[in-house]
Image 1 (cartoon, rainbow, N blue to C red):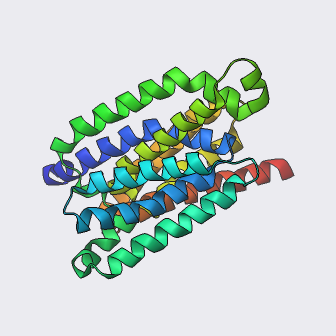
Image 2 (image 1 turned 90 degrees about the vertical axis):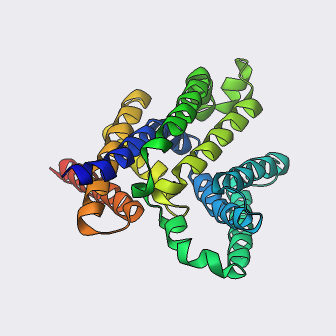
Length: 266
C-alpha cells in the first residue's frame, strides 16, 4: 500500500495543482469562444518535443519555445479580415506537420512518442512538485489580477474597451497563460488531450451553472473528480493516465447531460 501511495500521491498532487488553472482557463476559453486554441497549442508541443531532441535541450525548453512562438505568430497575424478559427486551423496544421516531419527523422524519439501524445502523470516525482507549484501560484496571481478584465472582454469586448480595458493586452495575457498551461500539462495528459482537459470540465459545469462563479466552481470540482478517479483507475487497470483521466471526464459530462435532458422531459 505504501508503495502505491509513493507512486500515486505526487501524481495526484500535481493533478490537483493543475486543476487550479484548468477550471478558470477552461471557462474563459468557452466564454471567449477560443476552444480550438488549446488544440492548436497542443499540436505545437510535438514540434517543441522534436526541437528539444534535435538540439539536445531539456524537453520543457523546446515546448516553451514553441508555445511562445505560437502566441507571437498569432499576435502578428491578428487581423479583422481573418477569422480566428481559420488562423488557428492554419497554425495547428503547420505545427503538427512540422513536428511529425521532424519526429520521422528521429528514430530514437519514436518509442517515447506515446508518452508525449497521451502523457503519464505517474512519472511525476516529489522533487518536481515545488517547481510546478511555484509556476502555478505565479500564473494564478496573474490571472487573479486580470480576472475582472478577462470577464469583461469575454462578455462584450466593445463595452469592455469603452470602459478602459486594454483588449490587446488582455488577449496576450490569456494566450500566454494558456501557453504556460500547455507546458505544465504535457506530462499529465500529453499533447493530444490538453484541449480536452480544459474544455470538458467547463462544458459539463456549464450545464449545471447559472453564473460565471458557479461555472468555475463546477469546473474545478469536475476536473478534480476526473483527475482523482482517472489517476487511481489508470493505476489499477494499467492504462494510460492521460487517456483514463479524459475518458472519466467525458463519461461524467455524458452523465450530467443525460440527467439534464431527463429533467427537462419530466
